[in-house]
Image (cartoon, rainbow, N blue to C red; front, side):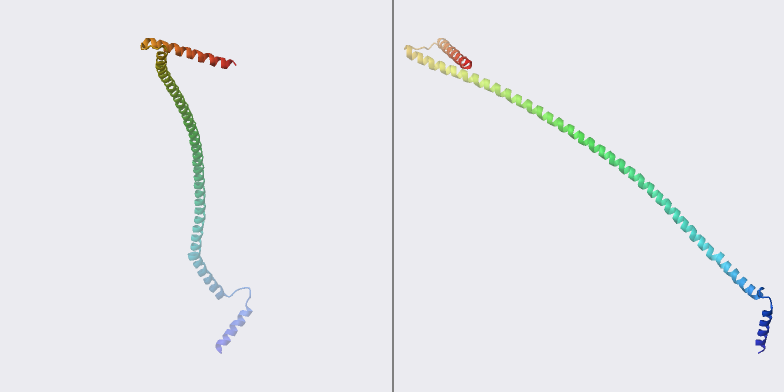
Length: 191
């Protein structure tokens, strides 16, 4: 009971004190609590927050720098790619043009070779035809001469064995035959 009375007396005394002035014990306890809280904040929380802030700032700045470096590298690679692509296009164009030129040269050479071969074959055929004609004319003269001599021998009744004479007779006969053939050819051409 005494205790309760003392508490009541103290409460009455307090009530009579100025309500604007706080109790000293409350000020002390509140100040100690504030100082402990301030110490904890300054010692542990602020450094952790500062460290987190620095890490985030470095990460953001580093990310931006890496992004800018990657972007610059990508731009450089794009320029290199475009340059290589342009060089490849130029080279392909040159190769196509060279192939066209070579094809034209091959065609020209083939035409020239074919023309030369055709001329050679034509000349060879002409020479061969002339040689065969000459051979045929010679064989014909000999045969005609032999036939004419034997026919003349039978008609005249004596042997015409003289080769020089028989050769003259044959030549004269063939010359007359050629002249007669030429005159019929020219007469047929004028009609």
